[in-house]
Length: 365
Image 1 (cartoon, rainbow, N blue to C red):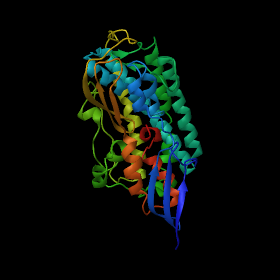
Image 2: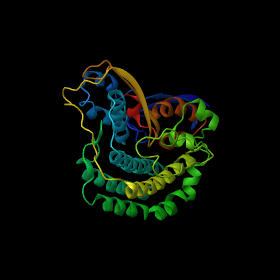
Image 3: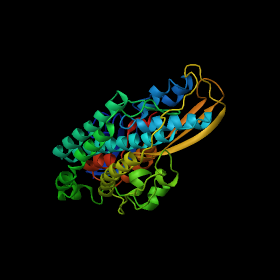
Image 4: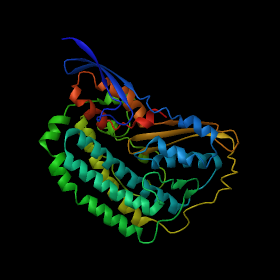
């Protein structure tokens, strides 16, 4: 058959944001794939070198619109390390609860996109509704629904509102009550199995060689999670498990996402029960005149998509000297996606992309 060049995106409904793939196909089989995420060109890392330490909080959130909260944490942890700022114990618990709520919201958004991609519109609508309940909690905590700017150096901006614990528990129970419906309609569906099983398979060897993290790595059986191997916030204060699968395909990756949401709910309940009283913020100097001591640092956390890192250097001035993020989507959306698409069907391009949990802004930053 004749080999053709096919452009998939960037406006295609199956794309993850402003992202494009050039496919070389023979029939409906992909021979070669070349990722092109360069449709955003926002240059946040360079912009941050021209903004004061406090101004950068409005920038870091935009690197991942789906889950800006891990970006807030990374920036705060880097500044805290450079400036020698301690975080109160209660603030560490609040950060962990807040980040796990963000993880659930991000996973629900991912489930919405993936289910919608496969034609499970009812499941997609459930997921988006349940994510909206998480956004309601964020609005109560921070005053905003998407970009929160709640975590900052020294702790968090304000304590949880009165009665929030009960509302968090009620919301999570409401979302959890839908798990049997999700399982019956989607996860245990033969249609999901047929569309995702043995599709977009990443072996453990490939995952390690190509820099896979998060669900992509854990779907191959690797129990790798920064929250366990290098604990931060209050993740070492409660017991929790790392969900894994073995086959490394799209089916396994989405099941890991499902299991992680349930584990996050259990973790939040434990953190709420154990959260101590006390301060939530150690004051910093006037943020508009603040100069952070010279030095460099590298911090990392486990975002909803995997290991997220930040290198930051200060020359002692009122703004960062160098900033560079290490994001999960960089390896997933460039190296791994191009390799995994070879030999797959055109119909599964979106399927595979969504299962790799790619967010285009994390690449083109």
